[in-house]
Amino acid sequence: MTVITVRVDEETKRMMESLEINWSEFIRQTVRKRIREDRGKNLARAVLINERLRRKTKGEAKAEEIVRKFREERNA
Image 1 (cartoon, one colour):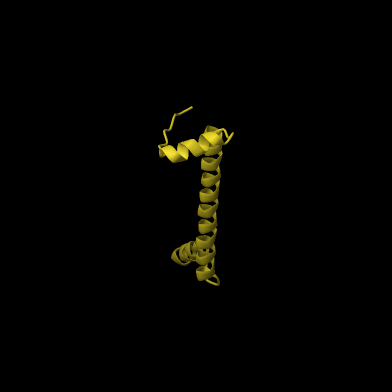
Image 2 (tube, rainbow, N blue to C red; image 1 turned 90 degrees about the horizontal axis):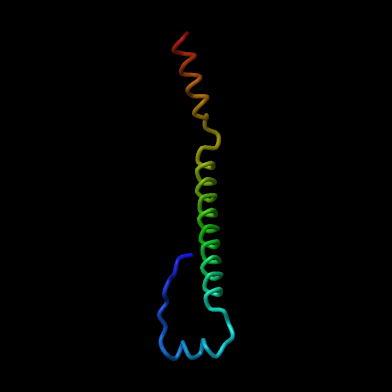
């Protein structure tokens, strides 16, 4: 496991000590949660981009169809 150091002021440290919380575990969970949220946002962004691209090409011939038609005309 990697070690990360976090600096807090004296007042915050005193307040932290007054609570019975495993701060290392709390920070690990918070970091994991943030990573999941960020990945979710990236996935949502990718879906939106994909949908926009699909809407733009709706009704147009697919690349495979265009290539097939080009080859058929070339061989005719």
